[in-house]
Length: 246
Length: 231
Image 1 (cartoon, rainbow over the protein chains, first blue to last red):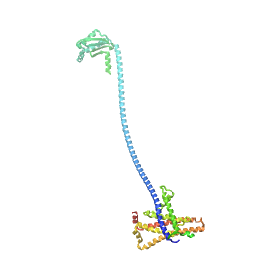
Image 2: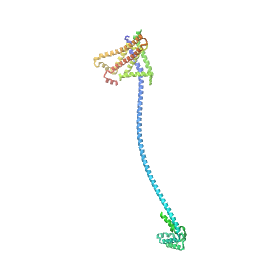
Image 3: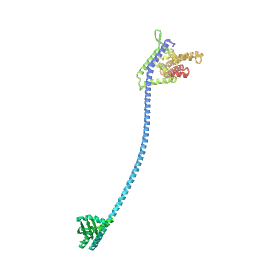
Image 4: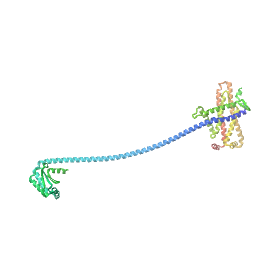
């Protein structure tokens, strides 16, 4: 039980050796493993922090981009609505103009149709009137009426203006031209001589006269002198009246 | 014969050196710790098993204890204090193994450990503060206290040795007496008390050593000491 110096010194040396053993074989390896694990954990945490920061950065960028998209979409929508409004206005204006043009066109067409109908009715009325007048005149016309018309022709030829006389002169110049005389009834020799006398007084010479009968004239004469036609019959008068009424 | 087993006794002699059972047991403990540390060191993995987890937990617990007392000098002091704790735990508990006796029941062994603590206190104090600064603290606050400082160094070292020896020897004696008196089964609760007492004594011895070392390192003004530590 007593104190022993050998044991004391050996225990002291043993303890110092044990300090080295445990430091070399226990503490250092375990500490190294702990530090490696801590380093890995730190690295993982760092990586996680970096990824988190990156994720947050991406999130911020995404949110900023989304906000930008929202603004851009809003602007695009506003532009689109403005453009639609303008286009709607333009189209509405064009439609109104087109409608106005169509209305005007319809109005013009209606007016034209109305005018056409009116004219057609007028023409029909005139034609019917001319027909009625012609049938009436056919019934009342006779040689006496034609004789009176011949007298009127002769009187008119005598009062023909100088300009018309000058225009008729080339037609019968050198005796080449001929005067064609159409009458509803056969003219008597007296009537023919009176007409030829009037023509000689008008033209200065007596051209060759061809007398023909044309019952369609109802009563009266139609005299062709070159390019000129002198109408003194009821048929042409009725046509003149109808055309003048148009 | 029983007295021979309870108290340390010489097993053999090599020249003038007497080899007691205390030394042989210490060698056995050292061999076991070395083998355990070597086997553990070969099988350390990133994903720890049960044994590695326990070893890492023990190291971290000791580190935390040392860091609380010496936050800036932990790396220097830790191997010594950790060895002290591990050896004392194993040495105190080895007496529970039939045929073996705790080395710490021998005053020569506890005296050796106390002297090791005594020397380590001065070693770390001089290494960290420098010789002049360390010796100067014996003269503070006044040189008149120098003898009392010296007496305190001796007595606390002696107290370390005697405390550990007395407690462990008493545990051995109580266990032996109970076996004699009450047979084999009755001492089991007492043996549990032995385990607790062995752990407590190991903790007390190691913690006192740590406090002594810390007091030697931090005897000067705290701010300059910390400044030099951090430097």
